[in-house]
Amino acid sequence: MKYAAARGTKDILPEEASLWQFVEETGREVFELYNYKEIRTPIFESTDLFTRSIGSTTDIVKKEMYTFPDRKGRSLTLRPEETAPVVRAGLENNLISPDQLIKLYYLGPMFRYERPQAGRQRQFHQAGIEAFGSADPMLDAEVIQLSVKLFEKIGLKDLEVDINSVGDKKCQPLYREAIQKYFKENIKHMCDDCKERFELNPLRILDCKEAPCQKYIEKAPAAIDYLCAECKMHFEQVVRWLDGLEIRYRINDRLVRGLDYYTRTAFEVVSKQLGAQNAVCGGGRYDDLVEELGGKPTPAIGFAIGLERVIEIVKQLQITNYELRIVDLFIATIGDRAREFGFKLLADARNKGISSDMDYLGKSLKAQMKSADRLGAKHVYIIGDEELKKRLAVLKNMKTAEQKEVAFDKLEEELKHA
Ligand code: HAM
Image (cartoon, rainbow, N blue to C red):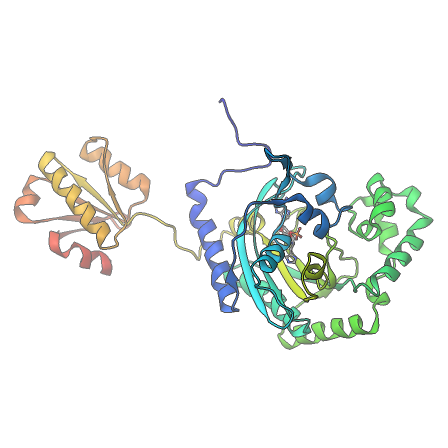
Protein backbone atom coordinates (compact mmCIF):
# COMPACT_ATOMS: atom_id res chain seq x y z
CA MET A 1 0.00 0.00 0.00
CA LYS A 2 1.36 3.36 -1.02
CA TYR A 3 -0.38 5.70 1.39
CA ALA A 4 -1.76 5.25 4.88
CA ALA A 5 -3.68 7.64 7.12
CA ALA A 6 -1.25 9.82 9.10
CA ARG A 7 -0.28 8.50 12.55
CA GLY A 8 -2.95 9.28 15.13
CA THR A 9 -5.69 9.82 12.55
CA LYS A 10 -8.48 7.46 11.56
CA ASP A 11 -10.91 7.07 8.70
CA ILE A 12 -14.53 6.84 9.76
CA LEU A 13 -15.85 4.28 7.33
CA PRO A 14 -19.43 4.00 6.01
CA GLU A 15 -20.16 1.03 8.29
CA GLU A 16 -19.57 3.30 11.32
CA ALA A 17 -21.28 6.36 9.91
CA SER A 18 -24.75 5.55 11.29
CA LEU A 19 -23.28 5.36 14.77
CA TRP A 20 -21.48 8.69 14.38
CA GLN A 21 -24.61 10.32 13.01
CA PHE A 22 -26.63 8.96 15.93
CA VAL A 23 -24.21 10.39 18.49
CA GLU A 24 -23.92 13.73 16.69
CA GLU A 25 -27.66 14.07 16.18
CA THR A 26 -28.37 13.20 19.80
CA GLY A 27 -25.86 15.91 20.72
CA ARG A 28 -27.58 18.51 18.56
CA GLU A 29 -30.97 17.49 19.87
CA VAL A 30 -29.99 17.82 23.54
CA PHE A 31 -27.99 21.04 23.01
CA GLU A 32 -30.98 22.60 21.29
CA LEU A 33 -33.29 21.34 24.03
CA TYR A 34 -31.28 23.56 26.38
CA ASN A 35 -31.41 26.46 23.91
CA TYR A 36 -27.85 26.30 22.56
CA LYS A 37 -27.28 27.49 18.98
CA GLU A 38 -24.66 26.07 16.66
CA ILE A 39 -21.50 27.97 15.80
CA ARG A 40 -18.89 26.83 13.26
CA THR A 41 -15.46 28.37 13.33
CA PRO A 42 -12.41 27.83 11.07
CA ILE A 43 -10.19 24.80 11.60
CA PHE A 44 -7.11 27.01 12.00
CA GLU A 45 -6.56 30.21 13.93
CA SER A 46 -3.72 32.52 14.73
CA THR A 47 -1.32 30.63 17.05
CA ASP A 48 -1.35 33.43 19.56
CA LEU A 49 -5.04 32.83 20.36
CA PHE A 50 -4.25 29.38 21.75
CA THR A 51 -0.99 30.29 23.46
CA ARG A 52 -2.70 33.08 25.38
CA SER A 53 -5.85 31.22 26.35
CA ILE A 54 -4.76 27.61 26.97
CA GLY A 55 -1.55 28.80 28.65
CA SER A 56 2.05 28.77 27.44
CA THR A 57 3.19 26.20 30.03
CA THR A 58 0.48 23.60 29.30
CA ASP A 59 1.31 20.36 27.47
CA ILE A 60 -1.04 21.38 24.68
CA VAL A 61 0.80 24.61 23.90
CA LYS A 62 4.28 23.34 24.70
CA LYS A 63 4.26 20.17 22.70
CA GLU A 64 0.97 19.28 21.09
CA MET A 65 0.02 22.01 18.66
CA TYR A 66 0.09 21.66 14.90
CA THR A 67 1.64 25.04 14.21
CA PHE A 68 2.86 26.21 10.82
CA PRO A 69 3.66 29.43 9.01
CA ASP A 70 1.42 30.32 6.08
CA ARG A 71 2.91 31.62 2.85
CA LYS A 72 3.21 35.10 4.26
CA GLY A 73 4.96 33.83 7.38
CA ARG A 74 1.98 34.23 9.76
CA SER A 75 1.90 31.59 12.47
CA LEU A 76 -1.26 29.49 12.32
CA THR A 77 -2.38 26.51 14.43
CA LEU A 78 -4.89 23.75 13.79
CA ARG A 79 -7.36 24.15 16.63
CA PRO A 80 -6.46 21.88 19.58
CA GLU A 81 -9.77 22.81 21.23
CA GLU A 82 -12.77 25.02 20.56
CA THR A 83 -13.29 27.27 23.59
CA ALA A 84 -10.78 29.92 22.51
CA PRO A 85 -12.04 30.01 18.90
CA VAL A 86 -15.64 30.39 20.13
CA VAL A 87 -14.61 33.30 22.38
CA ARG A 88 -12.68 34.85 19.47
CA ALA A 89 -15.65 34.46 17.10
CA GLY A 90 -18.12 35.66 19.74
CA LEU A 91 -16.11 38.83 20.33
CA GLU A 92 -15.37 39.47 16.66
CA ASN A 93 -19.04 39.17 15.75
CA ASN A 94 -20.35 41.01 18.81
CA LEU A 95 -22.25 37.98 20.09
CA ILE A 96 -20.74 38.19 23.55
CA SER A 97 -21.63 41.00 25.92
CA PRO A 98 -21.45 41.03 29.71
CA ASP A 99 -25.16 41.53 30.37
CA GLN A 100 -26.51 38.97 27.97
CA LEU A 101 -26.68 35.20 28.16
CA ILE A 102 -25.53 33.55 24.96
CA LYS A 103 -25.37 29.80 24.50
CA LEU A 104 -23.36 28.23 21.68
CA TYR A 105 -22.54 24.66 20.66
CA TYR A 106 -20.18 23.05 18.19
CA LEU A 107 -19.17 19.73 16.71
CA GLY A 108 -15.99 19.07 14.82
CA PRO A 109 -12.40 17.85 14.56
CA MET A 110 -9.61 19.05 16.87
CA PHE A 111 -5.88 18.42 16.54
CA ARG A 112 -3.28 17.61 19.16
CA TYR A 113 0.14 16.09 18.55
CA GLU A 114 -0.13 13.51 21.34
CA ARG A 115 1.25 10.01 21.62
CA PRO A 116 -1.52 7.97 20.01
CA GLN A 117 -3.06 5.21 22.13
CA ALA A 118 -6.52 3.79 22.75
CA GLY A 119 -8.86 6.80 23.14
CA ARG A 120 -6.20 9.29 22.20
CA GLN A 121 -5.71 10.47 18.66
CA ARG A 122 -4.02 13.35 16.90
CA GLN A 123 -7.18 14.24 15.03
CA PHE A 124 -10.23 13.64 17.21
CA HIS A 125 -13.73 15.04 17.41
CA GLN A 126 -15.45 17.07 20.07
CA ALA A 127 -19.04 18.14 20.67
CA GLY A 128 -19.21 20.99 23.11
CA ILE A 129 -21.06 23.96 24.50
CA GLU A 130 -20.09 27.39 25.78
CA ALA A 131 -22.42 29.73 27.70
CA PHE A 132 -21.43 33.37 28.19
CA GLY A 133 -22.72 36.13 30.43
CA SER A 134 -23.70 34.50 33.72
CA ALA A 135 -21.79 33.56 36.85
CA ASP A 136 -24.88 32.00 38.41
CA PRO A 137 -24.06 28.61 39.99
CA MET A 138 -27.42 27.42 38.68
CA LEU A 139 -25.93 27.63 35.19
CA ASP A 140 -22.99 25.46 36.29
CA ALA A 141 -25.49 22.87 37.47
CA GLU A 142 -27.46 23.13 34.25
CA VAL A 143 -24.33 22.64 32.15
CA ILE A 144 -23.34 19.54 34.10
CA GLN A 145 -26.90 18.24 33.94
CA LEU A 146 -26.88 18.73 30.18
CA SER A 147 -23.83 16.51 29.77
CA VAL A 148 -25.40 13.81 31.94
CA LYS A 149 -28.64 14.04 29.98
CA LEU A 150 -26.80 13.68 26.70
CA PHE A 151 -24.94 10.58 27.84
CA GLU A 152 -28.17 9.11 29.18
CA LYS A 153 -29.91 9.72 25.87
CA ILE A 154 -27.12 7.95 24.01
CA GLY A 155 -27.47 5.03 26.43
CA LEU A 156 -24.11 5.20 28.22
CA LYS A 157 -23.87 3.62 31.65
CA ASP A 158 -21.40 3.60 34.53
CA LEU A 159 -20.34 7.20 34.15
CA GLU A 160 -19.13 9.33 37.01
CA VAL A 161 -19.19 13.08 37.33
CA ASP A 162 -16.16 14.51 39.13
CA ILE A 163 -16.28 18.12 40.22
CA ASN A 164 -13.92 20.51 41.91
CA SER A 165 -13.42 24.22 42.31
CA VAL A 166 -10.09 25.67 41.28
CA GLY A 167 -10.83 29.15 42.63
CA ASP A 168 -10.33 32.46 40.92
CA LYS A 169 -7.68 35.14 40.40
CA LYS A 170 -7.84 35.95 44.09
CA CYS A 171 -7.48 32.53 45.66
CA GLN A 172 -5.67 30.55 42.95
CA PRO A 173 -2.25 32.11 43.69
CA LEU A 174 -2.54 31.13 47.35
CA TYR A 175 -3.30 27.56 46.42
CA ARG A 176 -0.46 27.48 43.91
CA GLU A 177 1.88 28.66 46.60
CA ALA A 178 0.62 26.00 49.01
CA ILE A 179 1.13 23.31 46.37
CA GLN A 180 4.64 24.49 45.62
CA LYS A 181 5.48 24.59 49.26
CA TYR A 182 4.06 21.11 49.80
CA PHE A 183 5.93 19.47 46.90
CA LYS A 184 9.21 21.27 47.50
CA GLU A 185 10.45 18.56 49.88
CA ASN A 186 9.59 15.58 47.75
CA ILE A 187 9.80 16.71 44.18
CA LYS A 188 13.25 15.10 43.88
CA HIS A 189 11.59 11.66 44.31
CA MET A 190 8.99 12.33 41.63
CA CYS A 191 9.01 11.79 37.84
CA ASP A 192 10.70 14.13 35.36
CA ASP A 193 7.37 15.51 34.15
CA CYS A 194 6.42 16.44 37.70
CA LYS A 195 9.79 18.12 38.17
CA GLU A 196 9.15 20.22 35.10
CA ARG A 197 5.59 21.00 36.22
CA PHE A 198 6.88 22.02 39.62
CA GLU A 199 8.78 24.85 37.95
CA LEU A 200 6.25 25.84 35.32
CA ASN A 201 2.73 24.84 36.31
CA PRO A 202 2.69 23.21 39.77
CA LEU A 203 -1.07 22.45 39.85
CA ARG A 204 -0.61 20.07 36.95
CA ILE A 205 1.41 17.77 39.25
CA LEU A 206 -1.93 16.61 40.68
CA ASP A 207 -2.79 15.13 37.29
CA CYS A 208 0.29 12.87 37.12
CA LYS A 209 -0.58 9.20 36.59
CA GLU A 210 2.85 7.74 37.44
CA ALA A 211 2.57 5.21 40.29
CA PRO A 212 5.61 6.38 42.33
CA CYS A 213 4.25 9.95 42.41
CA GLN A 214 0.84 8.98 43.80
CA LYS A 215 1.81 8.73 47.45
CA TYR A 216 2.92 12.38 47.37
CA ILE A 217 -0.06 13.58 45.35
CA GLU A 218 -2.58 11.90 47.64
CA LYS A 219 -1.61 14.05 50.59
CA ALA A 220 -1.29 17.35 48.71
CA PRO A 221 -3.43 20.29 49.84
CA ALA A 222 -6.88 20.54 48.24
CA ALA A 223 -7.95 23.61 46.25
CA ILE A 224 -11.28 23.64 48.08
CA ASP A 225 -9.49 24.45 51.33
CA TYR A 226 -7.94 27.55 49.80
CA LEU A 227 -11.04 29.08 48.20
CA CYS A 228 -11.91 32.69 48.99
CA ALA A 229 -15.34 33.32 50.52
CA GLU A 230 -17.01 34.07 47.15
CA CYS A 231 -15.59 31.01 45.41
CA LYS A 232 -16.49 28.84 48.38
CA MET A 233 -20.08 30.05 48.31
CA HIS A 234 -20.26 29.59 44.56
CA PHE A 235 -19.07 25.99 44.87
CA GLU A 236 -21.50 25.23 47.68
CA GLN A 237 -24.34 26.47 45.56
CA VAL A 238 -23.27 24.49 42.50
CA VAL A 239 -23.32 21.38 44.67
CA ARG A 240 -26.69 22.36 46.11
CA TRP A 241 -28.24 22.79 42.68
CA LEU A 242 -26.75 19.52 41.50
CA ASP A 243 -28.40 17.85 44.50
CA GLY A 244 -31.63 19.62 43.56
CA LEU A 245 -31.41 18.20 40.05
CA GLU A 246 -30.62 14.77 41.49
CA ILE A 247 -27.33 14.55 39.63
CA ARG A 248 -24.89 12.14 41.19
CA TYR A 249 -21.37 13.54 41.43
CA ARG A 250 -18.15 13.07 43.32
CA ILE A 251 -16.16 15.96 44.72
CA ASN A 252 -12.67 15.21 43.50
CA ASP A 253 -10.19 17.61 45.01
CA ARG A 254 -7.40 16.20 42.84
CA LEU A 255 -9.16 17.27 39.65
CA VAL A 256 -7.15 19.81 37.72
CA ARG A 257 -7.69 20.45 34.06
CA GLY A 258 -5.06 20.51 31.34
CA LEU A 259 -5.89 24.05 30.21
CA ASP A 260 -5.05 27.16 32.22
CA TYR A 261 -8.17 29.25 31.69
CA TYR A 262 -10.38 27.62 34.32
CA THR A 263 -11.78 29.44 37.33
CA ARG A 264 -14.08 28.04 40.03
CA THR A 265 -16.02 24.99 38.78
CA ALA A 266 -14.02 22.32 36.95
CA PHE A 267 -15.59 19.00 36.07
CA GLU A 268 -15.06 15.80 34.16
CA VAL A 269 -17.25 12.88 33.26
CA VAL A 270 -15.30 9.63 33.38
CA SER A 271 -16.22 6.17 32.22
CA LYS A 272 -15.40 2.84 33.83
CA GLN A 273 -15.64 1.33 30.38
CA LEU A 274 -12.44 2.95 29.11
CA GLY A 275 -8.79 2.41 29.99
CA ALA A 276 -6.30 5.13 30.90
CA GLN A 277 -7.98 7.75 28.72
CA ASN A 278 -11.26 7.55 30.61
CA ALA A 279 -12.54 11.15 30.45
CA VAL A 280 -15.44 11.43 28.05
CA CYS A 281 -16.17 15.04 28.88
CA GLY A 282 -14.24 17.88 30.43
CA GLY A 283 -15.14 21.44 31.18
CA GLY A 284 -15.70 24.18 33.65
CA ARG A 285 -15.92 27.90 34.24
CA TYR A 286 -13.53 30.37 32.67
CA ASP A 287 -14.68 33.72 33.97
CA ASP A 288 -11.53 35.64 32.94
CA LEU A 289 -10.96 34.37 29.42
CA VAL A 290 -13.25 36.75 27.54
CA GLU A 291 -11.48 39.73 29.09
CA GLU A 292 -8.05 38.19 28.51
CA LEU A 293 -8.90 37.88 24.82
CA GLY A 294 -9.90 41.52 24.55
CA GLY A 295 -13.57 41.61 25.58
CA LYS A 296 -15.31 43.14 28.56
CA PRO A 297 -15.26 41.00 31.72
CA THR A 298 -17.84 38.28 31.00
CA PRO A 299 -18.24 35.08 33.00
CA ALA A 300 -18.49 31.86 30.98
CA ILE A 301 -18.74 28.10 31.34
CA GLY A 302 -18.68 25.13 28.98
CA PHE A 303 -17.52 21.62 28.26
CA ALA A 304 -16.40 19.39 25.43
CA ILE A 305 -17.13 15.72 24.90
CA GLY A 306 -14.65 13.42 23.13
CA LEU A 307 -16.71 11.69 20.47
CA GLU A 308 -14.26 8.86 19.73
CA ARG A 309 -14.45 7.82 23.39
CA VAL A 310 -18.25 7.99 23.42
CA ILE A 311 -18.38 5.90 20.25
CA GLU A 312 -16.02 3.36 21.82
CA ILE A 313 -18.36 2.91 24.80
CA VAL A 314 -21.43 2.63 22.57
CA LYS A 315 -19.65 -0.18 20.73
CA GLN A 316 -18.56 -1.93 23.93
CA LEU A 317 -22.04 -1.77 25.43
CA GLN A 318 -23.48 -2.92 22.12
CA ILE A 319 -26.03 -0.14 22.22
CA THR A 320 -28.35 -0.50 19.27
CA ASN A 321 -31.07 2.02 19.98
CA TYR A 322 -30.35 3.83 16.74
CA GLU A 323 -31.34 3.12 13.19
CA LEU A 324 -28.79 1.92 10.69
CA ARG A 325 -28.92 4.04 7.56
CA ILE A 326 -29.71 1.44 4.97
CA VAL A 327 -31.36 1.60 1.62
CA ASP A 328 -35.12 0.95 1.67
CA LEU A 329 -35.46 -0.41 -1.82
CA PHE A 330 -33.33 -2.17 -4.41
CA ILE A 331 -34.82 -2.45 -7.89
CA ALA A 332 -33.67 -5.65 -9.60
CA THR A 333 -34.43 -6.03 -13.28
CA ILE A 334 -34.30 -8.72 -15.96
CA GLY A 335 -33.77 -7.59 -19.58
CA ASP A 336 -33.19 -4.19 -21.19
CA ARG A 337 -36.77 -2.94 -21.23
CA ALA A 338 -37.29 -3.73 -17.57
CA ARG A 339 -33.99 -2.06 -16.80
CA GLU A 340 -35.03 1.14 -18.57
CA PHE A 341 -38.34 1.11 -16.73
CA GLY A 342 -36.57 0.34 -13.46
CA PHE A 343 -34.28 3.32 -14.02
CA LYS A 344 -37.30 5.65 -14.24
CA LEU A 345 -39.02 3.98 -11.29
CA LEU A 346 -35.83 4.50 -9.29
CA ALA A 347 -35.88 8.27 -9.97
CA ASP A 348 -39.57 8.29 -9.08
CA ALA A 349 -38.98 6.44 -5.79
CA ARG A 350 -36.23 8.89 -4.83
CA ASN A 351 -38.50 11.83 -5.65
CA LYS A 352 -40.94 10.35 -3.18
CA GLY A 353 -38.26 10.18 -0.52
CA ILE A 354 -37.63 6.42 -0.66
CA SER A 355 -33.91 5.74 -0.41
CA SER A 356 -33.24 3.35 -3.25
CA ASP A 357 -30.72 1.94 -5.68
CA MET A 358 -30.27 -0.46 -8.61
CA ASP A 359 -27.52 -2.32 -10.41
CA TYR A 360 -25.19 -0.46 -12.78
CA LEU A 361 -22.86 -3.34 -13.53
CA GLY A 362 -25.11 -5.42 -15.81
CA LYS A 363 -25.30 -8.25 -13.27
CA SER A 364 -27.53 -11.33 -13.46
CA LEU A 365 -30.69 -11.42 -11.31
CA LYS A 366 -28.95 -13.72 -8.85
CA ALA A 367 -26.00 -11.36 -8.56
CA GLN A 368 -28.36 -8.40 -8.21
CA MET A 369 -30.07 -10.14 -5.28
CA LYS A 370 -26.66 -10.65 -3.72
CA SER A 371 -25.84 -6.97 -4.13
CA ALA A 372 -29.14 -6.01 -2.48
CA ASP A 373 -28.33 -8.34 0.38
CA ARG A 374 -24.84 -6.92 0.81
CA LEU A 375 -26.25 -3.39 0.85
CA GLY A 376 -28.67 -4.48 3.55
CA ALA A 377 -31.61 -3.27 1.42
CA LYS A 378 -34.90 -3.70 3.22
CA HIS A 379 -36.86 -4.63 0.09
CA VAL A 380 -36.16 -5.76 -3.45
CA TYR A 381 -38.60 -5.09 -6.27
CA ILE A 382 -38.07 -7.56 -9.09
CA ILE A 383 -39.11 -6.45 -12.58
CA GLY A 384 -39.03 -8.46 -15.87
CA ASP A 385 -40.96 -8.31 -19.17
CA GLU A 386 -44.01 -10.09 -17.70
CA GLU A 387 -44.20 -7.57 -14.88
CA LEU A 388 -44.05 -4.68 -17.35
CA LYS A 389 -47.14 -6.06 -19.04
CA LYS A 390 -49.06 -6.58 -15.81
CA ARG A 391 -47.78 -3.29 -14.27
CA LEU A 392 -47.03 -5.07 -11.05
CA ALA A 393 -44.05 -6.91 -9.62
CA VAL A 394 -42.90 -8.96 -6.65
CA LEU A 395 -41.69 -7.01 -3.63
CA LYS A 396 -39.46 -9.13 -1.43
CA ASN A 397 -38.93 -8.27 2.21
CA MET A 398 -35.27 -9.17 2.68
CA LYS A 399 -35.56 -9.69 6.40
CA THR A 400 -38.58 -11.98 6.50
CA ALA A 401 -38.17 -13.33 2.92
CA GLU A 402 -41.89 -12.66 2.51
CA GLN A 403 -42.90 -11.91 -1.09
CA LYS A 404 -45.89 -9.99 -2.29
CA GLU A 405 -47.17 -8.70 -5.63
CA VAL A 406 -47.41 -4.94 -5.61
CA ALA A 407 -48.71 -2.74 -8.46
CA PHE A 408 -46.23 -0.15 -9.76
CA ASP A 409 -48.42 2.72 -8.62
CA LYS A 410 -48.90 1.22 -5.13
CA LEU A 411 -45.22 0.77 -4.36
CA GLU A 412 -44.80 3.95 -2.34
CA GLU A 413 -47.84 3.20 -0.21
CA GLU A 414 -46.76 -0.39 0.38
CA LEU A 415 -43.28 0.65 1.48
CA LYS A 416 -44.70 3.23 3.81
CA HIS A 417 -46.61 0.56 5.66
CA ALA A 418 -43.91 -2.07 5.48
P1 HAM B 1 -10.27 18.76 27.20
O1 HAM B 1 -10.43 18.11 28.52
O2 HAM B 1 -8.90 19.04 26.73
O3 HAM B 1 -11.11 20.12 27.27
O4 HAM B 1 -11.00 17.91 26.11
C1 HAM B 1 -12.34 17.51 26.27
C2 HAM B 1 -12.52 16.06 25.89
O5 HAM B 1 -12.02 15.85 24.57
C3 HAM B 1 -11.75 15.08 26.75
O6 HAM B 1 -12.45 14.77 27.94
C4 HAM B 1 -11.65 13.87 25.83
O7 HAM B 1 -12.86 13.12 25.89
C5 HAM B 1 -11.54 14.51 24.46
N1 HAM B 1 -10.13 14.51 24.01
C6 HAM B 1 -9.17 15.39 24.33
N2 HAM B 1 -8.01 15.06 23.73
C7 HAM B 1 -8.25 13.96 22.99
C8 HAM B 1 -7.46 13.16 22.11
N3 HAM B 1 -6.18 13.42 21.85
N4 HAM B 1 -8.04 12.08 21.50
C9 HAM B 1 -9.35 11.79 21.75
N5 HAM B 1 -10.14 12.52 22.56
C10 HAM B 1 -9.60 13.59 23.17
C11 HAM B 1 -11.24 20.99 26.25
O8 HAM B 1 -10.89 20.79 25.11
C12 HAM B 1 -11.99 22.25 26.64
N6 HAM B 1 -12.04 23.14 25.49
C13 HAM B 1 -13.40 21.89 27.15
C14 HAM B 1 -14.17 23.11 27.55
C15 HAM B 1 -15.14 23.73 26.86
N7 HAM B 1 -13.99 23.78 28.67
C16 HAM B 1 -14.84 24.81 28.70
N8 HAM B 1 -15.52 24.79 27.59
